[in-house]
Structures are given as structure tokens and as C-alpha cells.
Length: 434
Ligand SMILES: Cc1ncc(COP(=O)(O)O)c(C=O)c1O
Image (cartoon, rainbow, N blue to C red; front, side, top):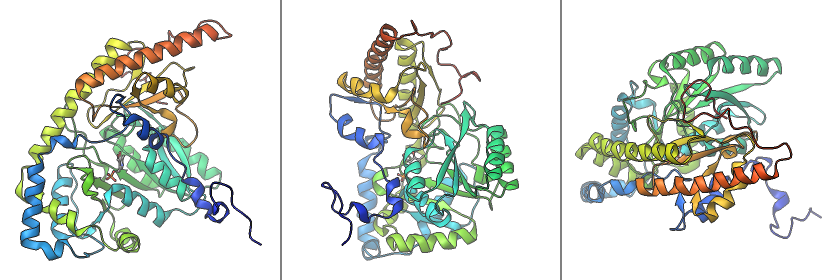
């Protein structure tokens, strides 16, 4: 007789070992609560799609249906529509990337490319090097393929090359197989920091000399505020980098269109994996987005998004300075996120229910680490709420944090907490992350 499951799930004992890696993230649990209208959510990373004129999309859709309807409604190729792949080259050229249309593979969002690459490379126990902190749903993918995620330290200039070097030496001495380095070098999620040009070159050199593939994930690169970011890592290294892009942040995530630009041999396997997973990415959305890119001022539209997010970033930084001047936070030059460091004794995760009671939500830092780090950190998103709501959200948050500090001070066995080491919103080297 086979072993029984449990009361909640009859099939509990039947799952593959890798399913254990699929635990619900903090973000997921939060969405349900934080989506209530009275809560100011600084938690999710939803793009502000209302800023995209809908007639631009409906116009493109009408033209596709009129001129190319049967193709839009049919299966397509596993690699994606050639005309869209041509446009993708134009998009990537803005960040210094030159590639061949043959090496672009369209995927169902860059999330799917992340999963396919992980599936192609990771055996259980293989090491994935990842920034600490890292994009939460990338960590879910790595864990679901039973990778051992090893975080590498970052500071306000991004990944620290020396930390990477030392970590690789340690892992190799332990006999570990390192498969790739996952990085969001530009306006990172969740830290909001950008890897400098010098460090990009240094990290590529470290990866090259250690035979480690770089997985460069770049959803936010074109959403800069004070000036463009350094060119993509893929702009200098072709063979050692798989580059991931997406239309989710510069157009709309509802299309579910992303892509990978990969060295030829990997590209071949990626297409086969894409076919195995979805047969072909959606012809319908690919043709609409391709038509949109042909017929509209898409770069102007990205400029509109930049202006909106810049204003919201400014609102968040000003509110933090006004309401929580004793904390530390990163100063993003683009993207969606600010990473906040709380005093060492504050646990952002256990404080969250109190925050939601005060009608403000954030994402606790532990969501972005595979190893339990980030307890006294939180990610704040400024992409979705208006500047007024952002300010009100930070005001509510300050009530929660100050209440928490008061509580900790009252009940601390060791007397009042020492907060003298905390400096305001600094970008000095002391502001290391995590
Ligand atoms: C760093 C990063 N990578 C990948 C994704 C996935 O984006 P999509 O699948 O919508 O292209 C996101 C979404 O928030 C992200 O922040």
C-alpha cells in the first residue's frame, strides 16, 4: 500500500523533490492584503500601466487583426516573430548591445527565460551565485531546480568584485560546481543600485577566468532618472553572457513578452526548451507589440514613464528624509525600488502585520535572500502609488517603525538601543547592503 498524504493534500507524498523549492514568497502572501484600496502598498513592483495611452495599444491591435489576423491567431515559431526580434535589437542597441536577430529568443516574459536557462544548466546541488539581495522570483526558480544559491555582497556600487573572487575560491575549495552568476546590474531589484562600469569589466573578467556564465537580467535599464546607466555587460562580452530583457516595464507586463540574447549554442537549446514548455510564445501579443514599435514613438513613451517614476522616486526620498531621517536607504538612479536598512534589532518581517494594520505595506528584506539574511531590511517600491500616497505611506511607516523602536527600547534587557551608528540616507561606502 502506498503512503498516504495528509489532510490538506492527498498527494503530498507524490511530489518531486524539487517541488519543495516552491514555497510561497512573502510578496505573494502580501499581495492579497496589500491590494485593499485603503492600504498604501509600497510592496509590489507593478508598473504604472495607466500612463500608457490605451488607444496606442488598441490601434496596433486593430491593425494587426485587419492585416495579419490569421497569423496573429495561429501558433508561431519557438524562437519568436522575426520582425519583433528585429525591434528587440533596436531596443537593446540603446544600451550598447549589438547582436544578431538569430540569437534572440522571445519568451513569455523574462521570468520564463530565467526558468528556461535554469532548467538548461542546473543539476540539483549546483551553485548559482547571486547578488545579496536578489530578485525574489529568480530565487524561487533557482530553488525549484534545487540549486544552491550563494549570495555575493553588494554595496551602493553593486556587486563587490573582491567578494565575488573570494566566494568563488571558497566554493571551489569545497568542490562545488558553479554554473552561473545571476545579476541585475542596473537599478537592481530589490536594492535599487547600479554596478559601475569599472566593476562590470572586472566582474566579467572574474567570470571569464573562472569559466562561469553570467546571466544578466535587465528589466529596468531604460528607466533612468538622472542620466543613462553604464552600458549592459553584454555590450562587451558576447560568449560569456546570456542577456535577459522584457517589455514589462517599458511597455506593459500584460503582454507577457520578454527575451533572451544568448550565444549560438545556448540559443539552440533555449529554443528547444521554449518549444517544450509553450510550443511558441504568443503570436498575438508579439504581432501587436511589433506593430506598436513600428508605428508609435515608443522611445517617447519610455520618456513619459521615466518622468513619472522620477517624480515618485523623488517623493519617496523626500518623505524618507522628512519622516525617517535616522534610517539608511539607497538612492536609485532608475527602476522601481529603494532598499531601506533598519536598526539591527528591528525585524521587518515580524513588524509587517503592524504596518498593514496602519494601512501601509512593504516587502521584508528576508524575501530577497535564500539564506535568511535581510531581517532588518525592507524593499519599498515607488512605481505604482502617486507621490501623495507615497508620502502618506512613508508617514504611516514612520509611525510603525518609531513604535517598534519604542517597544524594543522599553523591553530591551540590555537597556536602550544604540542607534548612533545609523546615518541618514547616505551613499557613503558605510551604506553596505544587507
Ligand atoms: C529583476 C527582474 N527580473 C525579471 C522580472 C520578470 O519580469 P517579466 O517576466 O514580466 O518580464 C522582474 C519583474 O519584476 C524583475 O524585477
